[in-house]
Length: 183
Figure 1 (spheres, one colour):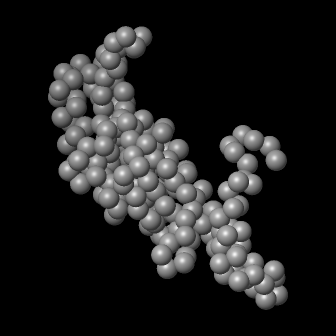
Figure 2: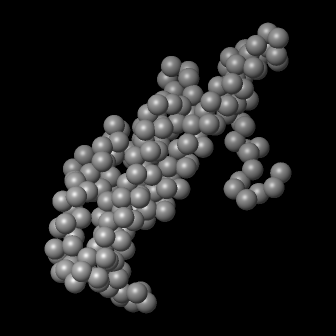
């Protein structure tokens, strides 16, 4: 299963943007528009996977189609995969639970993740939605990081030099509450 990390980072040009790392060896930066498009693709593909799972269950249980025919139908109407305009592609899929799971044999939605032709594994649709939410949160953080840096360097504000202001911004993370933590 692929692991995703998302953060607000300083880009080589000095701006702040969303940084996404997958499995520690694939990394890319997203500007505002690309981050919104990428998150929308993640949400769309997670919903497509849930929809595909429901369609397969409907076709096999209510319409009594074979599993293969139902899965072929889902592949036909969903298409191959969604491009993300970065190094990743997503494809909604339907799998089956394996023993010893209590629901062994039941259909489950999944999202297959690819980098070019390389399969990175699959992710649960809800986990992909969480990742998309993380991208949008990092997008907001990158905007606030830039605003904080500008205010720290403003002569009418704190009037720090740029390097000192960036150091302050980079130390901000240690003061941010963890999810669920009260400040």
